[in-house]
Length: 225
Image (cartoon, rainbow, N blue to C red; front, side):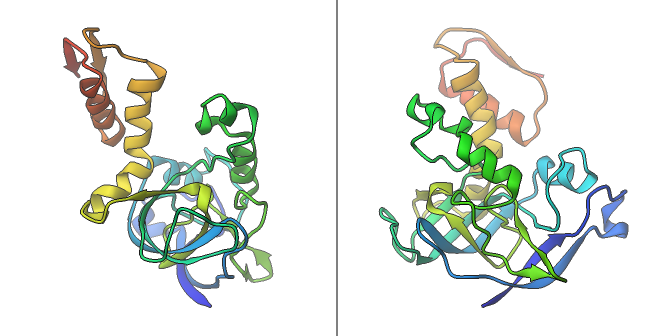
């Protein structure tokens, strides 16, 4: 099948991007999901600074690449060996797939999954495959296993988290990166305990999420700068 996707052919484009237009809308072939994978329809996607870092070349990735990693989506089709999901489920994408078997995953640090990180650097899904077809003879790579600047995508089931349907997609999409990063920084990295003081510097998307994480942890006093 063919789907529309925003593709970055090369990094290092200068701004303003409204004029230089580094992303091009292309019709790409999308193969069916393989073992452990699912096909999803993108309902909402967020533009993260990490996307801009790939565009300007400060975060090198293999090119060409179908960009985007922060999304809320609907499950359309399941590949073999996928359990816990059904067509029609609503999911949030995760930008680091967790294999569940490597040393970091086994110790409860799934965000540091080694096969997941290797797949992200290689531009593949967790299983090492690409489901995007070629563009001008070059294989199109996946962005952090998601590539959500597209109408549909194929992702690893290990890159999906099921959510309730009552959460609006435009809000749910932010849980794929901004909320995940900010709340995780407060709860996991800083490990804020109830009654401890905390300060959050910078109140962008990630900063606001860190503020919410600190509040949920019971930080007192809690200061936002």
